Length: 186
Image (tube, rainbow, N blue to C red; front, side, top):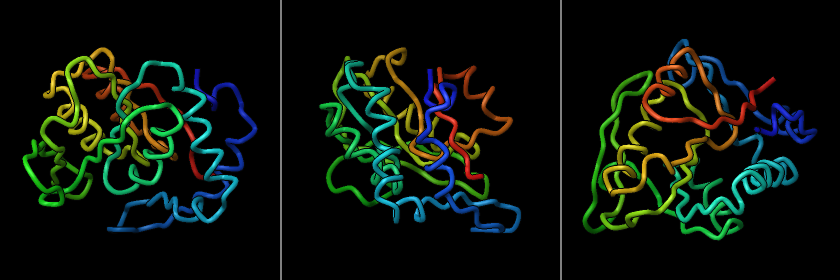
């Protein structure tokens, strides 16, 4: 059960630190800006702690962080739960051999890459990002991890904070199981 559904008192503090920026990066987009959350050490720590409490002891061996905000939340979560951190990056940012997956954004197309061999067969992965808009990035991350013989039923999908789910959430659930922590800007 998520902290939101349990009415964890930290949620309000975290929510209050997320700034909404209208029409960014394009008209009609309501951008959920977490940089204001990062300026508050307590809110930042509470955010990480909520995920650590949820996933510690769940046999997760990989925390995969989606560029770039997944790089902020993913490493401290990985360290605290005793997992390795695997960066999922934009094209041509990782040296060496990579695998890639294209996906659609709410305002275009993009691609994620991961080092070949970063995830071993049988490992369980937690995918960390700051939000879900269309779900394309999350699905691309899951395909990358799944293509490396990660047990799909063991993949726990979530996002860092905030997780914004729209009407496409039901589409994601038909493809993969999604565990969610709902924290929205007020």
